[in-house]
Image 1 (tube, rainbow, N blue to C red):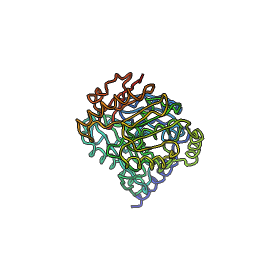
Image 2 (tube, rainbow, N blue to C red):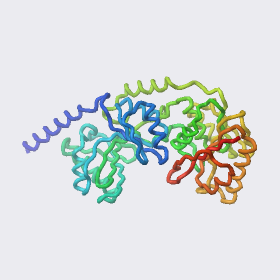
Image 3 (cartoon, rainbow, N blue to C red):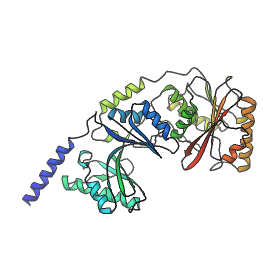
Image 4 (cartoon, helix red, strand yellow):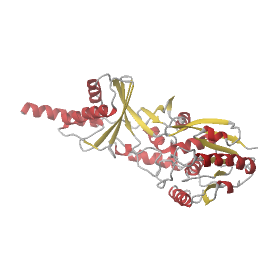
Length: 400
């Protein structure tokens, strides 16, 4: 027993020494942004503006590198990404034992204590291990066993709000392990509590507005504004508001989280915010409940005096200047509306565009290209974007 106790004491000493070897603030980190399909190039451009290095675009994401300041800025300011991951390690993973051994060999002693909680999210593709739930359990066992062997205690599992959320991706018998710095997905800005029947995620709204290039120099109108997401995201971009200023992030629970450095980065980004825009930003919707939700969302986003919402039908929409940008996400039959009614609506869209909005540029998110043809106008550009699993087109119309 004495020998066993001595070994346990030595293991705990080693763990304590390892725990002090946390990453230094200026060390180079390998990072990865998970991105809705179609928005990868936009995310890469956002990261480039923030000073990220080694930017590489892949389907569904962007890999990049930088120090802790880069990581903090990306969480606060990248509007089109779903999550930011810190890549921890890779290893061959052709069997359950290789998965267990590979996970156990990673430096969990530097990242976890027995008093912390963890969760493992896993995806599996084209590998001998075929079940993601099994792989997640095996990975969790390896981490828990390591901590128990070195400290005598084990961390608990919390799938909803863990101190450390671990992302395990297995593809072609190769495992990639990352730490999720985001916590909740990054589209949760913290201001949108009320959602209508067909909500548009903030990340997709940001991608749409970045494609439009709207910068606040001309009026902006959404004649079917729903919960106001397009207008609020577009206005926040034009003002250079900090996307994540009003929320918490997963990395705030990490052992090496530097609160002082985080506050410094946040203050630097907030100092870049413009006070106001001089031109109108207007949203219309025929549903009075949607208008109430829009106004509440605008208030929580700090944009109540910048974006105006009013109850109007689409046919009542009028331009608020000789030129401007019109952006809209009309229903396309997946969850809302009867097909015949939608056909009538899309014809009306084309008629209103031609009759009232000469001199404007219109952008329409189309989830059904057959319906979009009924607009009767030829788009000058098409951008592929995904609304969840649904492939859409953002259609640009120059209205002369």
